[in-house]
Length: 170
Image 1: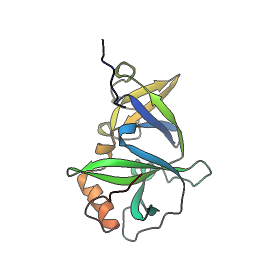
Image 2: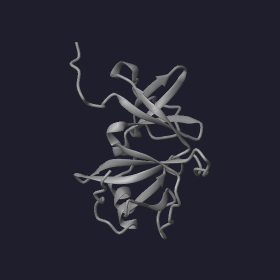
Image 3: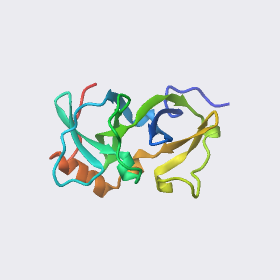
Image 4: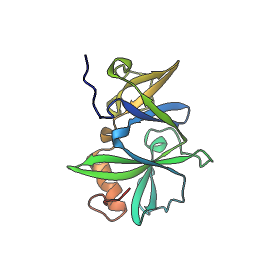
């Protein structure tokens, strides 16, 4: 029998990109914001939207749809920015991810998660932890630590003039 824990290892924040349902472990999610104005940074890759002001700190925002080749996120009433933590060279790096909408925190244990498929997704297999299911809809669970390479994270931090993420009080 599995021992109860205070961990959130089986909870995932679900969100939409295009017509797909995606998820991130809530262990990597700091908060969800309504869409705010993003200041574009010159000479950055297309997937970097720019920066937002989060409690006095410049936080880079990326568009996963652009990164995954799904087009660009349209700004609607449902568009959100998910503030995430990613491990970068031993430090936690904070950045925002644009999403078409945020759904809910969904609980899935290991038995409900299947291995990533060998084909049929628009994104690289190594970005995917596994495939969950909500009723008849598949949930693509992302490994946010693998979606961006160290070089890409360095570009994101360089764009906002930081060598590591700011410490932001919640």
